[in-house]
Length: 267
Image (cartoon, rainbow, N blue to C red):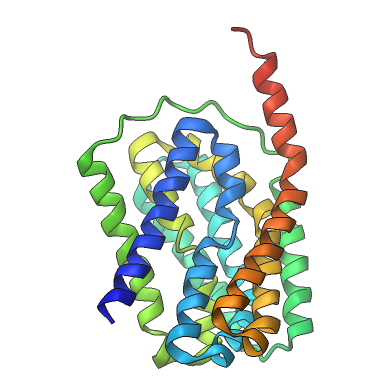
């Protein structure tokens, strides 16, 4: 059990630290796309499979597709709040409420794989449309990384992912699947970036978040098929293969536009 806990902490912290580095040192737009990659979903569904069995994780993956509605409501609410206030408290509180309310609705559903997929496709398309005209804003220079900064990111992220995964055996596969869609990597990322760099970086990141979620849809759908047939390890690898392919297709156009804008900037 100790090894499993350390594995959870290590993977999650590396994901958030990596996304933080991309957002602060390279591009918040790119970090937004990558934050849609199934980092948190894969971590949680993987450990569901290891701890509670492949069938439990496969059933949870179907609810994960429905739970993307709640996770995108979280991101959109956080984005809209930071347009009106720089308060970290209100952005977090209202965004978490924006997650819980749709999650309660989803928890009353009894979806098939097809209905869950249809909901995920419709909702993700909607949020892509809602955020499509948002321009990239000027980002304040990031603060230098320090030991204290890294430790605070480690502790916050690890605590969150452990809280979500440890309650899976209590709530059952439906709520477990919804929890697996909780932005377990995105929330600590935007919370910490907001606290340390202000809301501008966060808005740029969140405006690109839905576009990366097409890869989560591919991953969760793959897990629902592959885990019962091929087991957790092979199912995870196949899921990541599908997610990576989808993310590459979705992100190539905005990335080319971003790199072109960098070349056009005066030296």
